[in-house]
Amino acid sequence: MAIRPSSGYELRFGPELTPMVRALLILNAGVFVLQFLSKSLFSVSFLEPLFGLQGESVQSGYVWQLLTYSFLHVDFFHVLFNLLALWMFGSELENQWGGETFLKFFLFSSVMGGLFAFAAQTLGWSHGIVMGASGGIYGLLIAFAMTWPNREILFMLFFPLKAKYFVMILMLMIAFAQGGRVAHSAHLGGAVGGFLYLQFFYRTSRFSSGWSLKHYLQKRKFQRYQEEMNKRVNAKDEVDRLLEKISKSGMDSLSKSEKKFLNEASKKYFND
Image (cartoon, rainbow, N blue to C red; front, side, top):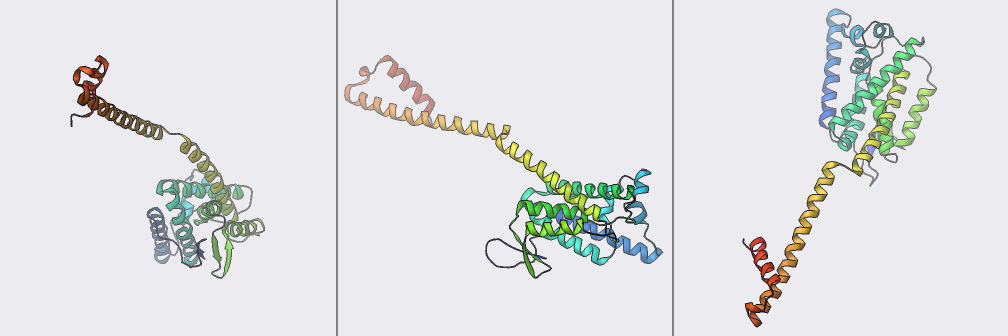
């Protein structure tokens, strides 16, 4: 997949890599290398039973598997396509939100994917050991489509689709998927998690953008500065009038209040 910006027709293969996405790419790739080495050396990976998601293990107390499953992958193409999607869609969203919010969003979507997969296994829809970052990825896809619904995506590198229609197709694929080794429940959970988190994030961001203490204090400071500048301008005009009066009629022509104002203004505004 590649993204085509809404303005213009220049194609580009993915956005600039962002710091948090880079860290997640390195982490996932590193874990996959450990999986590969353990299978090569010992014929079986010791990571998957401990960190892959299994309903029985979670019920026995291995609750960390609801998140750690998302850092394991089945094979090279599995990790390749997930990390490619993480880079292409995640970097855009991290640029929009910042690294901290992006990481919280991705982890929340991954955990929701784990919870849905766990629920499916508990209900008897077994997928074996669930692995892969797809829960978080589906959350990113939902967020991308909600943020830029009309941004065009080249589906399978050839077919231009708006992001909102692309995600609709993915959701239909989940709805009509039949068994197999793919944990569609994790995909659905990640998508639901992404939707819920994004709705919450939008609500809080709208509230915070409407009023904040920092914004209020900055506004008051600027208002006080404007008031002070207006006083200086008005004082200068009044001083110029009084000096003109003195030049024509002498100092005795000033009233007591005018003399007091001239004295205070000279001390306050014209000592520099």
